[in-house]
Length: 374
Image 1 (cartoon, rainbow, N blue to C red):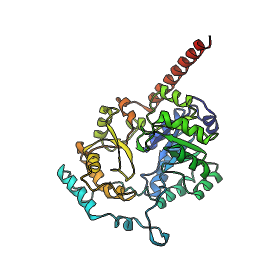
Image 2 (image 1 turned 90 degrees about the horizontal axis):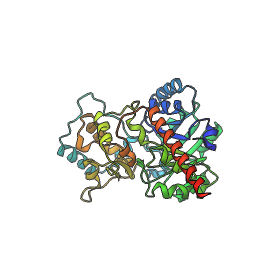
Image 3 (image 1 turned 135 degrees about the horizontal axis):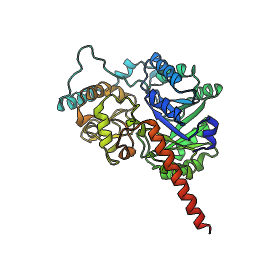
Image 4 (image 1 turned 30 degrees about the vertical axis):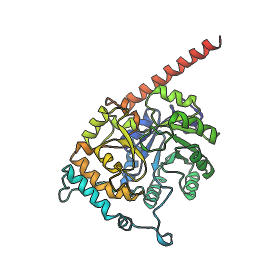
């Protein structure tokens, strides 16, 4: 699966794997793809440094990248000053806090025991935290910096280019992709409606060629609903120079999901068991449909707050739900490809299936083209 972009980055297969797990990112790169570590959960720079050190020690010299979340829109502040986490939390309405308490009480979710860690505070969606992550990351030989929520600020793009780091940004429409091109982005990830996490409303089969035509000659990666070699071949046939896969890695043996119950739910889910909901972060994000997402999407409820308020509001609640494995409320971001994720496999086994399926699809199309040409 070689393309001009994969050759430029020195990878065997044009498969870009986004994952929050360092072991999975390293395994993707070792398998001949391009591992991309998601940084949003790292609120402490030292924690990111520790995991980048681990990747460096286990990636066998293969290239890898980092994905940050720098929102295009920020919480408004007087005189443009930077708000602290406490100041942002103070903006959360009491009615929303009460709704969380009532929902947790309805399902009997226990409080955390005294001394228990309250879990990940979703501050990685605040620009100042993302910038601290970059201060760490640029000390490492990363080859790619991706931003999940629009183009990074101009100074971040310039800093990356100064260090010979390519910059990618996710786009859910051709209009968004053109904005990325104008901002100086090197790679556009066309993320279709089927994708897990933050995603738009246009399906990949429509979106990929639209973005390819809009931003050419910039390379485009196809994302959303891709989990087989046949789908990867289709993406390249549509003009993409590679595929960007995220959900498929959630159930690999190298992954370290916080809850075994989440893994069980993923393995049992079908492609129709996800929903785009604002329940997680305040922006539409595809995830497993649960009674938690239903509660937030119910018109009778208070509705989700804008990013990053919603993430801060629900962070402790989600920690409690996961810790006590309250199954009706337990979920995770994942795409519609979850319907194919019905067994635990190693990263290498996933790659073997992807490359075999790709070769079979290409051979089939060559035979079809040959017959039509006779």
